[in-house]
Image 1 (cartoon, rainbow, N blue to C red):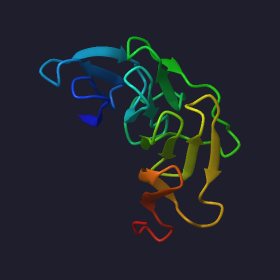
Image 2 (image 1 turned 180 degrees about the horizontal axis):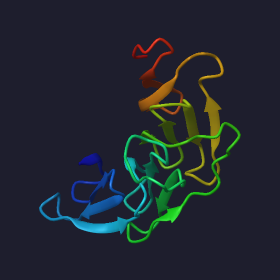
Image 3 (image 1 turned 120 degrees about the horizontal axis):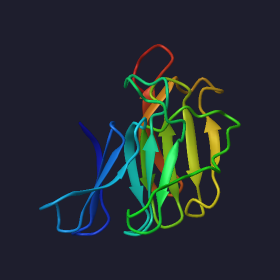
Length: 169
């Protein structure tokens, strides 16, 4: 089960899955190679600011996928997917449990949301991932869980998830 696919140009693309795998193509999808395998991870989403720099979001422990034990919210590559390192500077002020959706608007703006089953946290970087901020959308009763997002610009976008009464927001 592959959960997300992103192409950074006409030929180079990536797929992630809930089994903790990331695959890359360099020939527009004619062939794929595994570039990262993180046992215990549950990768749900990808975002790329360039063909060199990208991020993958992890659902984290306690999700519906059995055997997920990796507490790392996000991994980052800066060499086109050859290596992936844990992103360790996401504030835990709002204690995000995992990431469901991600989007890179440009080389500086990277946004993510999660998790689908609480808490509903919006995570944002405006400097290409050098620093991150978080906002708890549960605090103002806006949502119970967040699944995906789509931004048209750094300041205009929508976030999808679940409301308090179980309805979609």
